[in-house]
Image 1 (spheres, helix red, strand yellow):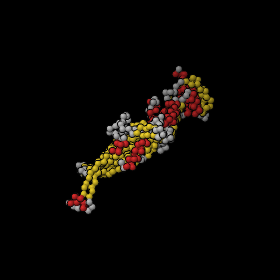
Image 2: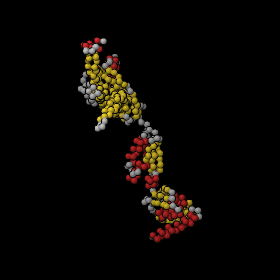
Image 3: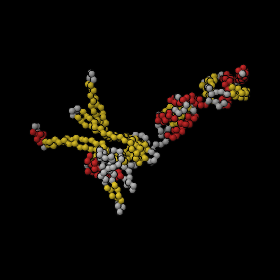
Image 4: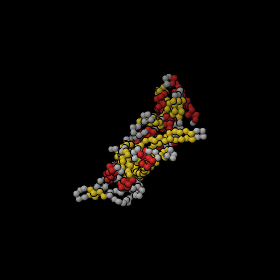
Amino acid sequence: MARKTGLLLLIITLLLTSASAAGSLVNMNVTNGEVRDVLTALAAVGGVSIVADDTVSGKITVRLNAVPFATALDIVTKTKGLSYQRLGDIIIVGSPEQLQRGFGEIAIFRLQYAEAAEAAGLLGVVLARQPASAGAALSHRLKVDAATNSLIFSGTPGETDQIRQVLAAIDIPCQQVVLEAQVLAINRDAAKSLGVEWEWSKGPNYPDYSKQDDGSWRVERKTTADNDNIPGIIQFGRTPEGFSYEMYYQFKINALVTEGKASVLAKPKIMTINGREAVINIGGELPVSVTTITDHATTASVEYKNAGIILKYTPRVNADGYITATVHTEVSSPAYVPELKAYKFNKRSASTEVRLKDGETMVIGGLIGKDEFSSMRKVPLLGDLPVIGALFRSVGNSQNESEVVIFLTAHIVK
């Protein structure tokens, strides 16, 4: 059998050689021959090297008359469901899948909404489920072009289609959320009257609404709290009649501001997209002197510390129209320490995760601070005299407790 195969290969080679000399036209008449032998004969005539992988096997029957070498190679490979890749004078023959893994087609995906780097991470998870040989060199086959927000991929047609399907699902416009914040500093006694008694109750006391015979509404303030709300968090909603709870508190706040018992620190508004963090920073940086002592010298430098209110809000829009949000608030204020000749920072923070309807309001409270004040009263001129001037002036110290309350209302942009 081996002798017969060798004789067949010799005859094919002679035919091809003669045809090559006459103008590289192949005349071939093979019946039930090994496809590897046919490829070897073609390589000899074409003056190239052919490398066949393990997927190249089986027999083939071919009858060709004065066919160009390239056409003959196409016919032989396609008849057996094979493909080839030419690298100079070397032709690599194998299954389309194997060749695409090594020399895959190049596809460029330009993303409109998703970030290319994040999409590449998701695609890495998807392609990792492929056989090890397909995903082993993923980092070399999938590249990110940040300048054009594009993905460049080299792989099989099947992998390319799979990537196209995944990108079609994630490269879509993200919903946007508008966050309205109202930051207030309220006197502690006034905060208690508002119902924000975070230290002694589980949550605020919602007012009762009742409809009168004349069609008007009567608002009655509760005096006890018996609910399961999260401490420090008010979740506002609406009464069955559609009357909003937050209106009651807004009226109270306006009254406290008018009376001087509360002050509006800021009313920022910010927009963010679904799943992205929005940061509101109300305040500034305070220079703080820092002394560094080493074995050889003592050096002084200045560092800047943030002071004020920092609000971080990350919304996730649910399919049912609710907003699940991760919220972190931080209030810091400097206080000078004469003994140390330096500042210390009083920091108050709260973190939570809540779920609210579109347009509902939540409140973060319990950020209590204590400020100390010194004041001096004196009789003009006499109070400035040395020694006896102390008889004509007085110094008073006072403390003021205030609570920072933050109202947050989120709206889904339609």
